[in-house]
Structures are given as structure tokens and as C-alpha cells.
Amino acid sequence: MRYLPTIGLEIHAELATRTKMFCDCRNDPDETRPNTNICPVCLAHPGTLPVINRAAVEHILRLGVAIGGTIADATEFDRKSYFYPDIPKGYQISQYEHPFIKGGTLAHVAITRVHLEEDTARSTHVGPVGPEPVEGKTLIDFNRAGIPLMELVTEPVIRSAEEAGRFARELQLLLRTLGAGEANLEKGEMRIEANISVSPADGVFGTKVEVKNLNSFRSVERAIAYEIERQSALIESGGKVVQETRGWDEARQETFHQRLKEGSADYRYFPEPDLPALRLSLIPEFSAETLWASLPELPWARRERYQALGLSQDDREYLIADPVRSAFFDEVVRELEGHAESVKLAANYFISDLGGAVGKATPAAFASLIGMFATNQLSSRGAKDTLARMVEEGGAPEDIARENGLIQISDESLLGGVVDVIIAREESAVAQYRAGSVAVLQYLVGKAMQESGGAGNPQAFSELFITKLS
Image (tube, rainbow, N blue to C red; front, top):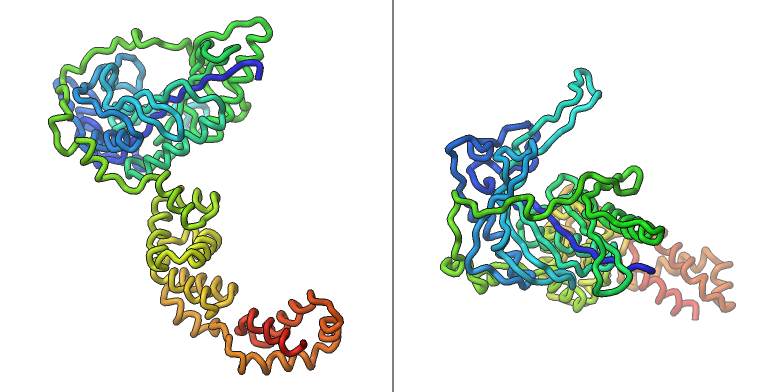
């Protein structure tokens, strides 16, 4: 590249709490009825006072401990003033100089800060569509107003669109692992903003451009790649990059100007007078040691453990991507007592045949199925058929396999008669094998499997053919 890109991310994620950030209204991101979960506090009626949501604070602190950040001893909330229809107070309760968390790293990217604030309402711009269009109107749904919102800011150390995408995916995974939120981009539960600049040399910063509200990981990567190319071409042609806020047009695959970028002075931050400053060091439950002890196994530790079990990178990432999936698989591993080959078999069958139907089988039953396959009681086909019936109807795999004639026969005294029948019937294939065509053995085994109705052990058939035809 002629110009070196520098990228920093600002990521907002709604937190999974029972109530909103500063009131008792229900925090329900799936509510579809407009203006249902609202009250005088989140609508900013005169005389109302906010109260801090303790669960939201705990989510932020657990995240901070997980990324190796420093928990603030003293912290406070601030008023961030700006005037949009979706901000009923005319300001947002946020944090400025004293965030809950400073520092830390995630996916090898340094973190500047993690703080807590309240979300805005949702605006819907009504156009000339529908049976009764109302043109030129913006409708406001206050259900989202006041939902606890995490903001995480990275250092400007990211160098590529791909690295930015990896970081955002890892943050989503961490939030889900901690139970802090689903961070679903399509539903707006996680919103990503990228600050991008290009410069001719390392250590020299160019003019920063912000691209806002990217709602998919692919959009993050495409918007950053586009902006790097746009800024580089602009400088190359003698133009000048302007500090601004731009949006991303998914249809056109390009960014577009929205407004000139505000600075912190424009927001007129000052301490929120209606909320107390917090001394977190005086709250025993919020000590770093107590918070660390409350954490589940973190994604990077689980990756290392799965690697030690011999799982491929693709299998590791598939399992880790969903905490429910990985918890189920861990139970299966315990049932199999960590036996390496059985664990690999379990991963293969889990990913290819169980997948999204995790809730329709128990780890113990699934582990029992894998054990039956590993000990040749079931063929590969038989294991798949048994699993399919287990998911659809429930029941123990042993009973399902027996009732449906799927138990594999390995007794040589029973299989020998089948082999004799095939040898007598397939004279041409037998002659080819005896003439040195080893490949025809699979053909003979296939015929024996058909003759046994799929119940014979193919390995035992193969060994019997070799013995009888040698």
C-alpha cells in the first residue's frame, strides 16, 4: 500500500438486564409494540430522578476484568448534550473523564476504555409507502430509550479491514460468553463505528473520518476497505481528506457524507448532578478478584482446550461461536472421559448432523451414540440414522438402533456365510481380485453390505474377503 491505514473502533452493545439503565421499565429488545416499556423517567418528565442499574454495572466490570482492563476506583456519570428527537432529555447520561474501565486487550487489539451509558429511542422515517402514508414525518418509539448500553473504544492500532472484523466478532463472542448480551447486529443490539485515516508513514496520523452504524461484520470490513481506498485516491489526486461523519450505503457499496464531525467540546460534558459518584473499591462484590472468580471459561481459553483435544480450527470456531453449543459439547466430552478419538468423532457428528438441534438430544445420549459407533456397534450410516430418529422422537440410541435393525453385526460366524454367497455370485469380480485388482475389494464389500441389509460391519467383511480369497 502507498498509504498506511490507521483504524480505531467504537462499539456500542445493549446489555442484557431485566430493567433499563436508570428506571424500572422492562428491558425487552424483542418488544414490537411501540412505546410499551416506558415511564416518566425514561421519557424525561420534569421532576423524575434516575437510579443506577447495578446489574449493568456488573456486566461492564466483568467484561473489563475479562479483557485485562483496570477497574476505576472512583467513577461518575456525565451529561452529554445533543439535541435529536430520539433523546427526550436533550442530553444522554454517559461517561467521559472517568469510565468504569481503562486499558485491556482483546484479539491483540489495545482497548482505550469501556464505559456505560443509556441508549436512545428508535426513529422511523415514514415515506410514501403503505395504505395511509404520512410523508415527511419521523415516528419515535421510546422502548429502546434508557436501555443499558456499553461503549468500548479501541486504540487506533488496527491496520486492516480484516483485523477490524476479527476484533468485532471476538467482542460479540465475549459478550455472549459472559451473558452480558446477544450483541445481534441485525437487531441493532450491537452497532459499530470505525474511525479511519491514511498516512504516508508509520507514526504520522492522517485526518480521521468516522463511518457510523455499520450493522454487519461484512459491512464493517467493506466500509473500511472502501474508505481506505477513497482517502488514498483523494490524497493521490491532490485533494484533502475532511474530518467528517459518513454513512455506509450497502446497495452502492460506498460511504457517503452525513455531517461534519463533532468534537467533545460540542457535547458540553459535565458531571450528572442527579447521580452519585461511585467508589467501586468500597464495594467487595466489585473487586477484581471476586469478578474474576465469577467468569465462565473465556473464548481464548476454550480454544486452547479444544486444540489440546485435537479439534481442527474450523471445528473449534464453530463450537465456540455459540455458548449453548459449546456447553453441550463439553458435557459430551465429560461423558466420553476425554478419549481423544471419540471426542473427534463427537465433534464431526455434532457439527455435521446435530448442529442446530442441540436442545433435542441430551449430552449423555449423544455420547452413548458416539460410543456405539466407536465400538463398531453402529456403522456410519447407522449412527446418522439413529441420531436423526433420536432428534425427532427422543429415546436412548441403543433402543432406537435395536428397534430399527441398525445394530451392526461383527460376528465372523454370521458374516462368513454372507461372504461365501457373494464369492459364489460375483465370479468376475473375484477373478479380478485374484488377478491383482485390489480396488475391486470395495465392490465386494458393498455387495456384502447390501446382502446383509446394511447390518454387517464393513471392516469385518473386508477382512473376511481377504482371508477367503488369499
